[in-house]
Amino acid sequence: MNSEELFNESKNYMPGGVSSPVRSYKPYPFFVKEAKGSRIYDVDGNSYIDHCIAYGPMILGHSDEKVSKSVFDAIKKGTTYGAPSENEITLAKEVVNRIPCAEMVRFVNSGTEATMSAIRLARGYTGKNKIIKFEGAYHGAHDYCLVKSGSGAATLPDSLGIPEDTTKNTLSVPFNDEEAISNLILKEGEDIACIIMEVVMGNIGCIEPKKGYLEFLRKITEENNIVLIFDEVITGFRLAKGGAQEYYDVTPDIVTLGKIIGGGYPMGAFAGKKEIMEMIAPNGPVYQAGTFNGNPISVNAGIATLNQLNENFYNNLNEKGQYLRKNIKDIVEDLNLDIMPVGLGSMFQIYFNPKDVLNYEDAKNSDSGRFFEYFKELLKNGVFIPPSQFECNFISSKHSKEDLDLSLEAIEKSLKAVF
Ligand SMILES: *Cc1c(COP(=O)(O)O)cnc(C)c1O
Image (cartoon, rainbow, N blue to C red; front, side):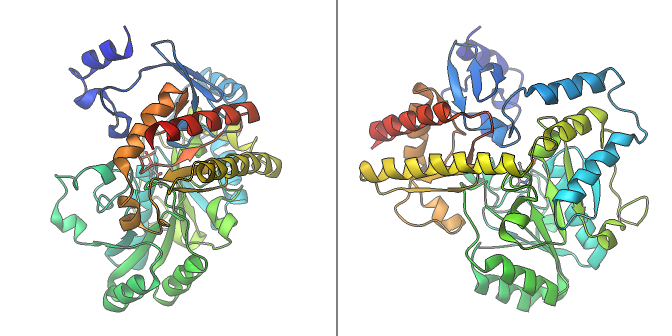
């Protein structure tokens, strides 16, 4: 069956024909046959350079040989035990050694679980109820955070099924606005357990913190006994060995991880200061549990991935990112287009917006309809990115210079076609 036929079949059995809403686009998404390295192949016989890479996890490209071997090795010894195993310590040490704020780790199964648990921990630790998130930030699909959320939720109305009693404790403010957060803390500071933030907002495109903003947040949270949580599900192990907190040199109290940490297998984690992490059950009174937590498959894949991510790896990857972004900028200038290429490290995006994008409001003012046309042109030209203005694009270490040159050609052609 081709993609169209598969879609017509799948929508009878799965809502919208997909297992996660961002995968859906009109008239129907391509169905994947396989993926290897920098490429993804559909059942219709097309090959694409993949800049979606599953929304971030595949930093070594698809089907990395060392990662696959580590998984084959693990499978032979069972797939989940309900009892601890030594490799969990190996991976926990890797996390602690790399990430500045991490002294202890709890492994979970997704980024969603990581942020949900980290928020519960912050509430348990401080004895306070309210949380602050930023408009347009996405922290997974759980009730605490689906308020003015990014990613797929940015394109839909706020979700039904979430009790007001839950979200009345979730306060949201614009990103990159010191006054907004100062005022909120002045008003509600006594009750605020944590600020949770994407250091770089990768679920509403790609927005960097203004200079000094992270330092400001670190200071104001310290002064008000508020736990600072960096949600590094995208940026962790991507921007640098120690993630965005190393890249920007600001250390939070808790970090949440996902995507890359499982090497392409389901996994998340949260980590932080010992004093806070010791509050987690069975040591402390904040409950968190999971049948598949720390399962040997994801753990082995995580170790085999992190083992390859050394300083040199990041220098190469970020250098490629810079090459791609510089050339995108040149293309946009040569074509005289009033749009904004953005990004850092191995992350990139183009805002179809004439103005600098500093927050959710700005991002929402972009021409997302025209962006979708651009996405479709890119597909025709052999490049796959997420089908939305409100996502980020990535490169993996398997993207060669030749791949990037092909992507640049496709980007130029596609921009010409839509403007
Ligand atoms: C993807 C993402 C999540 C959710 O992770 P899942 O593994 O999809 O549950 C949370 N926070 C951020 C910043 C993310 O990008």
